[in-house]
Image (cartoon, rainbow over all chains, first blue to last red; front, side, top):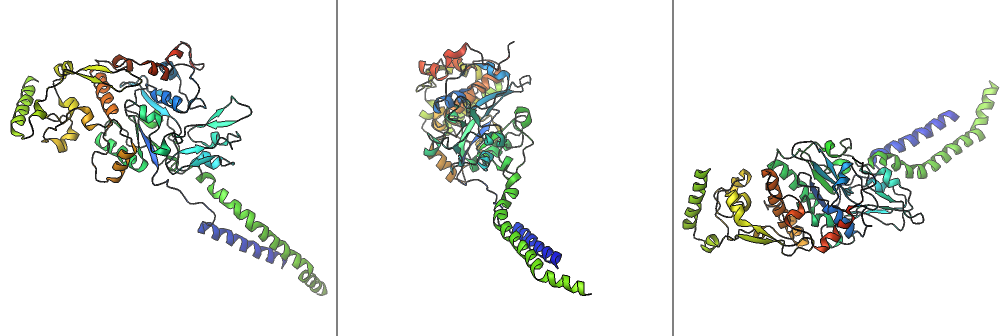
Length: 302
Length: 174
């Protein structure tokens, strides 16, 4: 009897868990992005590597003077990543290839479902309705979880200050421009219009239209349309994306999907498990206290 | 090539006669030089030698699309504009906005689902792509920023030009 009651209780508990799972009672739903989200379409076939976007970003965000001038082309010798002092960098690829080198601007891609936001336990990150992923440096404790979580290696850490640890990255010029409908500084300065600013939904159509009307010029893919659940920054390329520094291994599932099911169980564990195990404990106590003795005595009588 | 040129000239003159638009649109004096980047803050204004480009290219449509009355060259454009009549305005800025990403322009684009020319470039993008693109293709003409328009003092500061001496710490020595 004791074992039977225990198994029964376990079965009930298990069923509850299974039912909850199918109902998605605690699993968060997928997010397609804000409908009015803005974005930037980067046409890497147009970029000439002038680094004007880097200079504009530096001035707009009041970043420290660069180590060398923005005219310095020697920075292209090695691929760079964004830092706390430079929210965007331009890298050079395919140097030996006919048709010249290919340039690609790197900055925060402003994911629809940002991994940095998910990983931050002090809620320093916010995805705004305009599409920008911004952060509150006042609450940042400098744990650098977001740096590990980001699939694009974007957030930079400010190692300069010991007392005020802070993560820094592109915020799509949210405070100074995006909020009032203006394009980011990098877009505005780009001489080649390699960067196109607009509604994300419109940009996706424009990107596919450019591929359709110029099939020889582009690879038939818009990077960022679906990768990691979609990003506000979208890219067109004339060469395979992995050749110009993009990670082709990223799935279309947002990073949060890797942990969503597991994290969804946490509230269940906290709410159901205490009651469940208390019940099991009480049942077993009950068995041991009353029925148990009777059974044992009956068995002894035989 | 010369016969094609004659054809274009013929087409132009025919067009000029048959189209009832004010002839001023056609016969407006073709400028020998155009001052570009007039309102530039980072780069100085400069004079574009229009006459020299006409002599070298001969094809108006190479830069002016279908707007001048010469045959359209881009097959993508020709699908609709094969027989389009020339427009009253042929200057770049007549069509290409200097503020392509202003809130008003974006809202208008977003609202108009029927618009075909959704991807019309801004003035700056159109001119740079036209100039640099052709110069690269032909292997002639300036492609660097300051080869066309030298920087202003504000421009030098903007690009931190004075910090050209030092090499970045990560750069390898050759």
